[in-house]
Length: 549
Image (cartoon, rainbow, N blue to C red; front, side, top):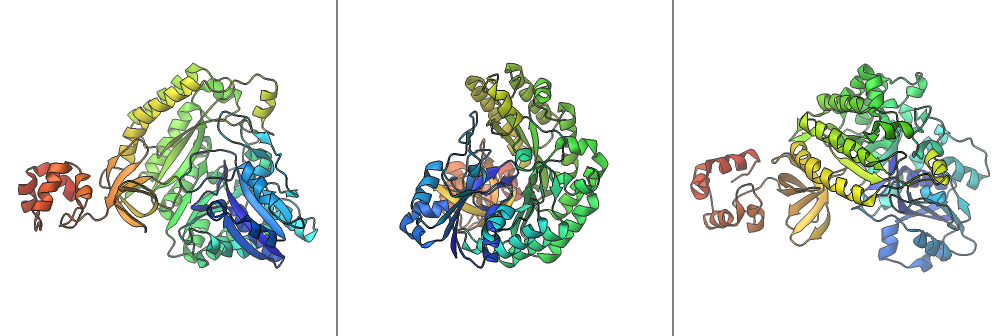
C-alpha cells in the first residue's frame, strides 16, 4: 500500500504541530502505516500550496490529513490547513483511495477566538479520534486494541521517527513529545477540551519516552519539547495518588541526556500553578531538576485564564490570584538564573476572555494583578491573551446552548489588550532579555526590507529582527526591544567590519557616530574608539555587549 500523510498542522491546548514543530500525530501515524508495510510519503500543507499538483494524489491508496486548531493563534512558521483545502485534497484522490482525517478537524472546526466551533462536517471515509494510534491500527489491521495502549504508541513512535527526515525544514525542527493524556484534576474548567479528548489521566512510561527521543535523535532531531501534557509537573502522579514524583523527572532527564549527548534544546510547556502551591516541596524539586537539565529560554505555561475570582468560580478554574502569584515567585526563585543573559526557566501566563460571568471588572482585575507582578520585580516570559472558543463536549458548550453566554466585549477586549501590551509587555520584555543578551542559533523565518526576522527552536521562542540578510542560523546579541519582538545583531559585532546599518543599531551610536566609526577604521583600541565617539559611557556599553575590534 502506498500512503501519504499531509501535515495540515495542529494546535491544541497540550500539543503544537506548526513548523518548526512536528506533532506526535504525524509520527505515530507514520509508524502505524509502516507496521502495515506501507510506503509512506509525507508533505506539509505549505508544500502542497507551493506545488499544487494535486493530480499526484491519485497515486495513493490512502491519504491521511492531520490538521485543525483548538486554540487558534498567530503563526510565523506556517498557516494551518483550512476546511476548503481538506475538501479540495480529498476530492482529488482516486475513487479507491481511503481518505482519513485526524486531528481536531476530525471532530470540529475552530476558526478564531470569540466564536463557536463547528461540529465536524468535512467529508472523509474515516475520522480518527484523539487516540490516533489505536484507531488507525484497528482500522488497518481490523483489530480491537484498547484505547490508551502505551505499548502500541511505543512501537508506532519508534517506527515513525524516520518520517521527520521528509519534513521541509529538516533538520531544523523541534519534536513535540507526549508525556501524558488528560488532566489530573477530577473536575475540569468549563472551556477545556483536554478531558473531552482524554477522559482519564494517564502517564506514559519513562523508558518509552527516552527510547522515542533517542530514536528521533538518531534520525537527526536535536530539539525536543515535553509538551503533550496538560500539566507537566503531574507526570506519573497517576501512579502516586495524584501527588508529584520528583525522582521520575531525574530519571527521565538523565535518560534523555545519556541517549542524546549533543541535544540542543530541551523545553517544556504546560503547568498548573495551583499544583505547584499545593505540592510546593515536591514541585520545587521537580522545577530544580528542570533547571538542571533543560536548555535556556524554557517556559512553563500557566493556565491562569482570569484573576477575577467570580469568573474563576463560575468556570470551575481551580486557581486563586494570590496562589498564582506564589507559583510565579517559586518559578522565578528557581528558574531566573541566566545563561548569557537568558533565563533558564520562566512562567508564561494565559488569559482567556469570553467566559461565564465576565464583566468590565474582569478586565480591571486582570490588569491590576499584572501590574502587581511587574511592580514586585517578577519575571514572566510572555502573556498570551485570547478569546475563548466554545467547543463541543465542554461544559461551556452546554451552557452556551441555553443562550446565556455573552462573548467578550470587542471594545473592552481591544482596549485592555493594548494596555497590557504597552504597560506590561514592553518593560517585562526588557527585564527578561536585557540588552547584551545572546541568543544562540537563531533561524531566519522571513524578511522585511533590510531586516531578517528569525527565532530559535524552542517553546514560545523570541521573535528577533536581525539587521542584514541571513539564510542560515546565526548567534545574535540583543540591542533593542519592541513591544513583541527583539532587535539583534550578528554576534560578535566587529566595529571594523560591521555594516553602516548594523552600526546605527548599536546602543548610543546612531547615524552620525556610525559614519565617524566607518571613516576612522581601522580602530585598534577602546581608547581610540572613545576619542571617536566622545562618550565614555557608550564605549562601556558597547564593551558590555561584547563588541570587538
